[in-house]
Amino acid sequence: MARARGDIKRLRRWALVHKWTSLACTVFLLLFCITGLPLIFSDELNELLGDQPPYADLPADMPLANLDRIVAAAKERRPDHHVWFVFVDDDEPQVSVGMLPSPTAEPKTASRLRFDSRTGEFRNEIEPAEVRPLTFVDLMLRLHRDLFAELPGELFLGFMGLVFVVATVSGGVLYAPFARRQKFGELRGASRRLWWLDLHNMLGVVTIAWALVVGATGVMNELSRPLFAVWQRTHVQEMLKPYRGQAVPEAASFSSVQAAYDLAANILPGRRPTSVVFPNGRVGSAHHYLIWTKGDAALTARLFTPVLVDVVSGQLTSVVEMPWYLRTLQVSRPLHFGDYGGLPLKIIWALLDLVTIVVLGSGLYLWLSRRRSPFEARLREEAAVQAHST
Amino acid sequence: MKTWRWPALLAVLTVVGLLSALLGGEGPWRVLSWVTLSVPLAIVLWSLLRSLMTPSVVNRRS
Image (cartoon, each protein chain N blue to C red):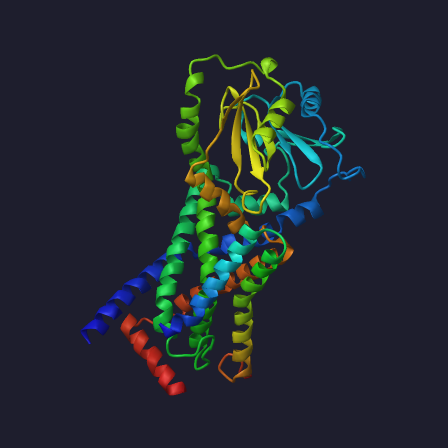
């Protein structure tokens, strides 16, 4: 008897945790679920809604056009801008050159010039995010990621994600005492409220592992800016010690981008460089090309490894060992986006998202239709209804 | 503990599904992820159909 009373006390505490954490995050979770739904299909939507010129029909095995030539062409088109990065796409035969009005300008001021990766011909230019009209996908992403509030928005929504994880765990703890009197998946119809309670419990528990993974990886993604900043201040600074005090090289003295790209490809067999980041004021080094490489296996394709190449001499400085927290972040991306298993996986992601919306809505309904009775009475009542209906 | 038997099985299937496409890449691993991650959705469907076929306050016509 004493033990049962202790159990009830413990459960009552969990019920309080579940109630308050859920109330705190439900509105934001509904926002995540609703804006996240189209974001699952953002690739498809961008392709559908974008107005990209068609690609020339060329043999599939054409080699990559010379990157130095592409960079020169980009500079010619935007002589007042500085090259920020060269990105070699692997979904489409294109190379994008990101250009900033100054080397330390904000990313939202960057223009992107796209070239055909086989012929090196200019295709089109994408205006900076700050002047470009917001597309539907952009709008969903901003609402989903930061509510247009940049870093503070990301941290706040990340915290809401953490609150959701606590709400989900506490919901899982409460599942057993509320569901032990019926068969699994049975929705008792003795009262409307009981049916919704059972539905809430059933939907919540069958999707609990997915919800925890998507919730936790979402929190990780919201932390990406601070995590990269920590890495920049510790690991990267450590590597750049020998360069401390040296003058920042002029753009005119930069060595060949193509040679740096080839160097990275050659020293890391089984990996492919995807982008070359030029010296800038944020991530990387004022003295190096930072070259991101990805592996060719399913998992290693997600684990990007950067290579630092001296921007003046073109010599390899180091292959950068990524710390565990950035590796975790890299794995968190696909697990949050659901974009790593083809269209069927995306559809499953969307359906699970819809189930989560019903869990949130039913939870809200259960709270609004709550009875002002103590927790023990609710548990007892629960038992009585069951005894009556069987 | 009995109450958690099914949910625990579904959680294991979910984790297997989430990881198989991530670690295995294209081909059979992808199909495995589609199948395992569909099981919770199938359970939802089964539970709802079952509830709609038994008389209760929610489907009683009034």
